[in-house]
Length: 456
Image (cartoon, rainbow, N blue to C red):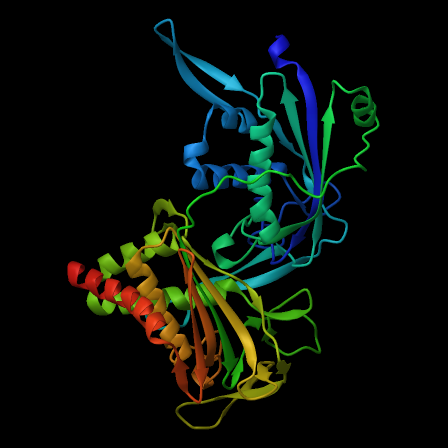
């Protein structure tokens, strides 16, 4: 029992800033199809289980070779071991404790969603839904506590903490639902690390007073290293005409449809981008493969959450970020519905909408970020084909595409993979790309062509 005696504590505090909306469902459907989790005062919060679960999965997924006995002591475990010829359950309580995260200024909003038929690109009947979100800009108080026992390796624990703090500070890890659509992105700021050695009388007194004022701004250890196997595209576009990501207002004086906002800023939600990209990627594959093969590959790439009575669930490896729409002006337009047989207006069919228009021609307004985790060469080639369609004004985004909205013009793009980067720029309707960079991108296109030859 002496080996299990507590000899110290590590306390980490900080502020978790939401960079994009967050969804942690409560299971209730009183006000929306998905409601966020709230406390007894009806305020949203992030449960510790959501934080711990994501961090544990991130560590195990990225550092499987470092999953040692010491690592298990940090995260806790329960497993069967063979003892005297019999299997017995062996458990170890986690040394890592996370408190629930609360915020005093978290705002809840409701967003609308609709399921699009991939065949004709129109909304399916009776497939509209809505969901609550914790809006971007909320700040949550983070409090971690790590218990150090005599038989624990304190240096390993500190290195694990450094490993999970680094992606939180850089905004790599997301929490909650719809993370593949850009939701739940956050950054850890104003971090403070306080260590207590209970063999030191002064530290014992500080712990009893809960005095965390002398903390450091980080942990002086290098995190575990791993091979980054991801492919990403960050492309900047201008709006050729106008764009609208429909959000329906309940206010009397507002238009029937406005553009979606987050924290007072117009945004292009990841849900709108991802749906369009998936449909176009599927269409490209179906040009060469049969429908079953194409759908199966898209499910493995973009994920699936049950369909047509099938309970199979696959997490998406494609992550699309939600970004602000900049350099735009909202303007209301009144429209009417025309009777296609008589050519006259349909009575009581007056409606209006407020799309976004570019302030200046060719001004940078939209940034689209596409990331593929654990990518394959042909998948990267497929995403470059989709980028070409976006760049060449062949893949509009948002609503009212039938009247020319949502068409984009490519300005620049950064393509990154395996610590390599290629930058594409457009000037006078021509691409600026050196021969070396073109060769690298052509390798992905060649891999896509080779994959198509295999499956045809």
